Length: 227
Image (cartoon, rainbow, N blue to C red; front, side):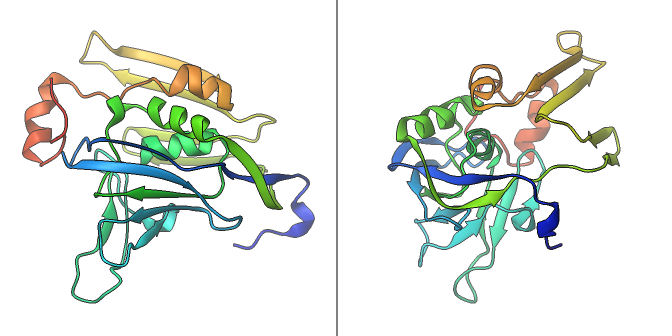
């Protein structure tokens, strides 16, 4: 749906990184040895994952329309450049995207030599460190800052998501594991900024219960993980 220009009250400059930075490691779910490189991108290009290991180096936009699966991780994909080839995919993009969005980066190319970013300890800290090391600069025409005008609610099974109009970007989360005494029920609320994300959220690691491991392994996941 197009944005009504009359409803845009605030804009900010677009942001990208100053120089390329890279890292490597094993993918959490695929177990593939992969290298990742963050590269500056021109204004208006958006966030794109580029599979440089594939012919033609196809790119997948980091957009909602590219999401193909959210089973244990977020997988994005696009059609191959040539007919008859396998569909182009990148798995487990959530930690990379969390770091990119927390640092308010709008334009970026993320080059990969495989189908998944490095596990990086199962958190976003490495990606925040890399992007901060690269430096961030402003470029291009200002873009609109969108605000929510009314509450939005989504419910699916045991998951409930509510978005409310606010003067700040704040996330409040309730986690409930009634059958696991070590986790139990927890609540956390935080105003999101580059600084708070780096100190409070980026080090938080993904986890699974020990009782779940055999089923997850049987599904072909966490090939790059270990006890």
